Length: 238
Image (tube, rainbow, N blue to C red; front, top):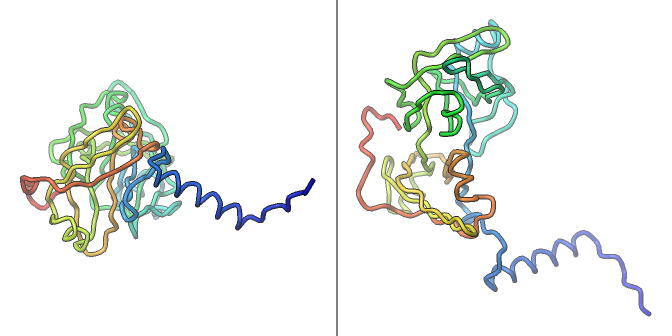
């Protein structure tokens, strides 16, 4: 009987890669998240705060403390969280604040979050908060009552102008996203293109949408140009 020599880590990793590659070529069920340059992210409930509201909620002179970088350069999840309070004292504790701070405060929820809070939050693109419902934000140092700013963030895709040219689209055009998952393939329509000089190619879905298409088990993801032009956003809001 011949005893086998123990495999080193590099050899094990090489064998695993070969098995996965063979499975994909053979049409197996190994998940393929997306094309190599496309990232699809689930954007959980969060809020953006103005400098004024950061100081009210967390104390005079306070600024946001970066905890984890997000995929897009210059953006991060902060260590700070707030409690979001809706009508009849319904609340969501520990809602993450994203940085950097903005000139206005905005709360982004999924549909089920809105139901939980008792707020009829409309689907809007980020920044388009005129006429939206408000809420109360509670922090360790104070309370802020927003008269508006609670939205369900419309699905969208960030990209550079170079990526946009590759897809044959431009800023504020609309695209579709097809997610093929076992038993629950879905076509998400009307993703707003948010193109600039520096953004990485990334789709943002909310938690309800991510769960609906079983994104973690996706076998194939396609970002598709859509016929019909732009979204018609006014005043540069998107």
